[in-house]
Length: 289
Ligand SMILES: Nc1ncnc2c1ncn2[C@@H]1O[C@H](COP(=O)(O)OP(=O)(O)OP(=O)(O)O)[C@@H](O)[C@H]1O
Image (cartoon, rainbow, N blue to C red):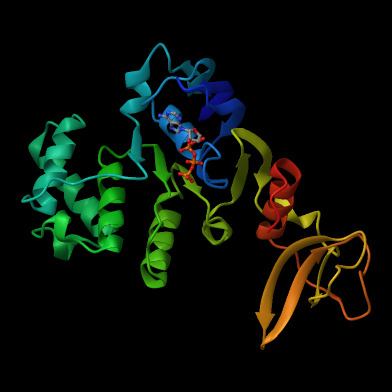
C-alpha cells in the first residue's frame, strides 16, 4: 500500500533526522520503535505530508506523493505527538468542525461517521463534554476519533499512549488493535511494551536510520538461548553484555547477553524485544541499559 524509498531529511540547523529510510508497508500495524530523538516524529510528519523529505520518494498505491499530496492526505488520519483542542466547544461540535475540514460535506453522512468514531473510541457518552476538560486517556481517544474521520486507509499515531495510566493504555491498545485489522497503522513509540502488545511488524529507528525491520518476534528470536539471568556480580563475567539490572525478591539480579552460560549461578531466560532493542542501542550509540 505504502512504499518509502531512500527518504532523507536534514533540518535547517544541520540535524540529519532521517537517513536513507526505505520501507514497504501493507495492512496491519507497524511499530516504529526508537529512543528520544531517533527521528520517529520526523518520519511520521514526512509520511503525513506535513513536511517534505529532502530526497527520496513516497508511493501510495504506486503513485508518487510529491506529485499528488492530496491523494494521500485524503486517505490518511494523523494523530500528532502533541495536539491542542479548542476550549469552550463540545466533543461532538469539534469533531463536526474537523470533519468539515476533512471534506465531509454531506451532513447525514458526516453525522453517521461521527457517531461511528465516537462509538469506536468509547466516547459516545462524552459527546456533549468539552475535550479541553477530558482526562488524558479520553483526550487520546478523542485524538484517535478525529484521525478516523474520513475513514482513512492509513493511520499515523505518534506516541499515542504517552502519559496514560495502565487501564487507559490497555483500552487504547484494544482500540488500536481493532482499527489495524483493516488498515495500515503506523505506531511510533519508545515504549517497548506497546510494540510487544500490538505490532506484528516493527522497525527499529536509531539516530535517523532503520537498523532492524521485520516480524516483531523475528527481531529477537535470534537471541534464543543467549539471554541469561543471575545475581549481580562485580565485575561482570567475561564475554557478556549487560542488558539490565533489577531487584528480584530484594536481591539484585542482572540480565546478560552471552553466547554461553556466563557462570554457574546463571540460568537461561526467554529473550524479549527489549533485549534486542538494548543490544542495538549499545551497538549503534554505545549507551548501556
Ligand atoms: N523542526 C526541527 N528543527 C531542527 N531539528 C529538529 C526539528 N524537529 C526535530 N529535530 C531534531 O531531529 C532529531 C529527530 O527528532 P524527532 O522529534 O523526529 O525524534 P523522535 O524519535 O520523535 O523523538 P522523541 O521520542 O523525543 O519525540 C532530533 O535531534 C531533534 O532534535
